[in-house]
Length: 231
Image (tube, rainbow, N blue to C red):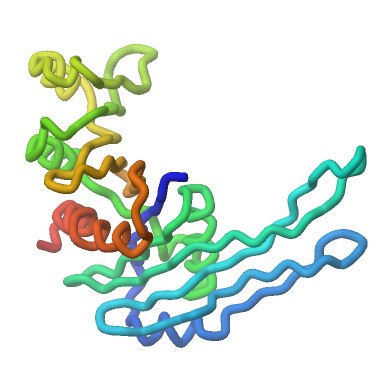
């Protein structure tokens, strides 16, 4: 399974101490079904250190499985590493999970911390910074998707394989759209990664979660900050 994460922008004025205090006892319980199955949503293993607050967000859900012709509810717990990090004048939230669960986590945390679903929003990398990122290591790029196209009835276009070497085609696509998604090999590491403009990061190469988070901190977050004009 690829590792995935999504990065969010905390727009509310806040401190790491405030975030840690509000999340320390975060636990919500609800009942499901006639049997009163208890579903827990909580944050645990919270740790405030240096420029970050780390913890584990877990949420129970019910899945229905077929057992000898009967639909049987089974409890499943989904977990995600969460990291609030303050860098320069920005506070960013990284959720290490696939994007749909990460979106749900960000929405719940936004409401719990700031009583608003608008306080934590998607982080963004500007099209200009995405282009610069690709052109810094063009040989490492395996796939580029373009969106926001002005072609009629065309939502996205892709370049991959030998097409990536066609500079004229690349320039033409840039004139008509913006880079949305890049799959690339990390220079000097040989890892295959994916990055979208709305800050979904995917590792297609097996690696420890700690190294994945380190890559996000060192490579992706600076792209976000440049896009925000923070550096």
